[in-house]
Amino acid sequence: MTEPTIYGTVITTEDSPSVSGFAFVIHSENSGVKRGQFVSVKTVEGTAIATISNIFKTNKYFESAGSVREYSKTTEMYTAFPIKEWEYTVAETKLLGVYTKDGMLNRPSFPPSPGIEVTEVDLQMLNRFLGLDQERGIDLGEIQQHSLRAKFNLTKMIQKHMAILAISGAGKSYATAVFIEELLSRDPKQGRVALFVVDNHGEYVSFADDPDFKERINIIDGEDVRLAVKNTGERMFAALLPEMSPVQIRELGKVLHHLKNEKHTFELKDVVDAVKDSEDIKKASKDALVGWLSELEDLKIFAQDDYPGYENLLEQGKMVILNLRNVLDLRRKQLIVRQFSTKFFNLRREGKVPPYLEIIEEAHNFCPEGTRSSEALSRHIIELLAREGRKFYANLCLISQRPVQLSTTALSQCNTQIILKITNPYDLDHIKKSSEAISQSTLDIVNSLKVGEGLVIGEAVNYPVFIKVRKRKSKESHGTKLEDYAIMYEKKENKLATGKEFL
Image (cartoon, rainbow, N blue to C red; front, side, top):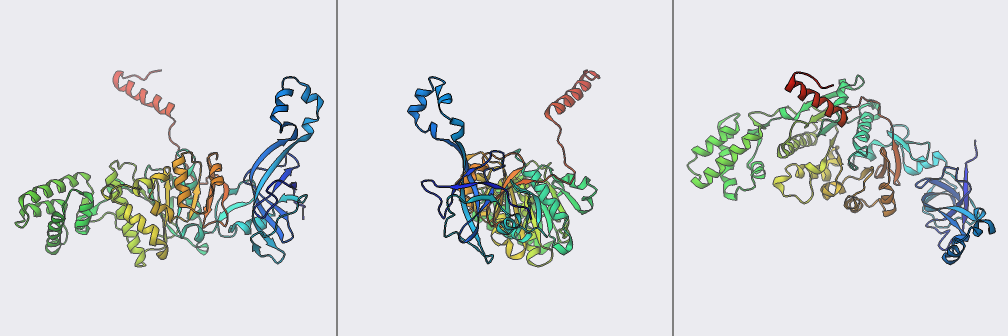
């Protein structure tokens, strides 16, 4: 068994060592000590684990501003005093827990002694401390600063819902693809769920071109989705048409009830005709209803029957992608997401579909904060899933680049969060308010993360941990670079105009 690397020695400061934390002098700047790293130290209670919260340099010769000012006028200070010999690098830590001699993890109740050595943490102990699952876990990459796989338990990660949050370009879609790979690659003995992905820009359809995954992918084009009018109640129409009065809603409900009794199936045009023919509706209300319902026909989403059928879509170990790339109208998008989410959740409550995970890209568009109901048609079902889905193994993953615009009700129910780089202070504050597990010092690090680096907090881990997302195994959908697309477009336009391509 190799001896652990010694990083430094505990020192005395004004406030430490204490049961909250300690500082130590780093022996060598080449030792690899980094902010956010876990270290261990011996105490009278056992082996304590701490995380490095800050690193700074100190030098006693530069403590007095006046002396530095006077000596800086000449070069004598560097020749008169052994300045380099009194420069130290100091790390400040936060004590997290202590493993007693009988293997129990307790809160620290006694500080380490000054002069004790600070060493690298044993990886098995760190794995146990973080609550990782190396046997059956979801492998997202590696714990930063440590040679330890970032493998998270499936139940702890998704059963109480999760969120992936980051600014545009920080790697959230890439991290989501890695997450999807892990779920699709699970063995039946490990426990598998069905996947339903709301893909706003067609970012995950490349899975269908990958030979290792294509047999498990079912893509539904959002343009083809239809909602059966016979299954649409007056409350749905009222949500789409907020100008409707309570009286008009009641009258429309009577018309719909009559049609459902008279016909097995019918279209929106039949509803319009029935409103026109009704003798019970006053002319002013009738004209308004006819006008509004005719406008809904422009959405081209209502039909005689639902498409697709929902009962047989979800299968364990397989993924359904709802590709909304070519659907531009936001209301239509929200209606489609509302339909799928409602159907799947109801089927899950009845036990007619397997446990599943619904992943929603750009979730702030479908479950916005502080927006009236008529402009957030899918918000109610998403918030319902967030509150009650875990009871029925209907799980939710919300992905957003603008957390401040995402429903606090939904986000607060996502008990695991993967946070990549975020710089907007309002988004950071919104995340902090929605999660009790994150501190201001941790958020400060989020601000400076590189692409592909992330923070995992909440139910999936016992303590917030930074990870480096692993490389994708599946085929990526590479977009054309702006310069190349501009050249291609100009060539096409020039050829159409002159019959020749420019050189």
